[in-house]
Image 1: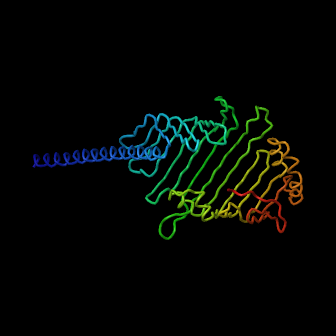
Image 2 (image 1 turned 90 degrees about the vertical axis):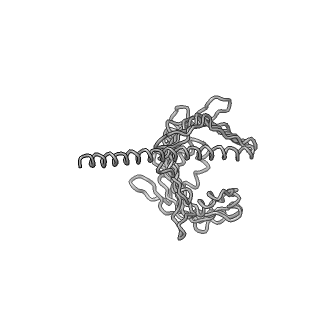
Image 3 (image 1 turned 60 degrees about the vertical axis):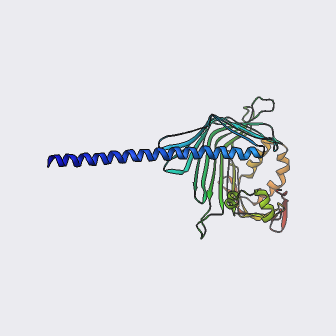
Length: 346
């Protein structure tokens, strides 16, 4: 009886060890298969770009993370489009996904990022840290987030960085809209938050930091992006619509402007929509504009004077709430009075 029990125990232990070995072999095979697919995908994308005359390189490319994580690593990155005149050069990239959750990828990119583009001075972007998170499913993109702290933007006219401005923090998010009856999503939600944007004033303190937040729901935005179509060409042919938009600009001294409402753009680039406007202390917004461009004070004096008359006093703060503006093919109206004409977007 004792011998039989020992044999049974040894058999079970052998089964357990065999299962562990089989599981380990399976995980190893799955990891190296996935690693091969990543390298194949990256090389395929580089080849497709090369056929269009575009150079893209991931220097020191390696797939790491064995056994439970998997991710692409590059010592540096480079992108060059000679026809478009665009070049982008970055430092080290590190990415990772759990092997059992390959649809969620996190990544880090080291600065600086050097950018050249037609019509712009060469730019250099640097930061303390920059992280992204991407979630995809069989239906495509579900969510993308980018967060960076202490972002500095510099011009490199003669190869030497000249600080233009800095941000305390920048956040950018994309999310697939609500699913339709077929289980898919066509709309795209986007939001951006820039805290503490400080235009460089040489340390004089004459220009104060400002905050900006933008959010919008683009009709068919995800469907167009995932289809690979040219966005501008699609909007020219079909028009575009933001089912929801919300923009808030505020100064640290208390000035605040908020615009919200649906917007549409036609195939000729003319904007239409109904906008609600909230204002806090319009004069402080003018002060900020004048600190950057002094003639702005005289240019804005008359319209701000009208707004001050419409504003209510709230414990010393001048406030306007729910001011409705109608935009019709670029014509901005307050009631029956045209107060501005917007240029075409394209």
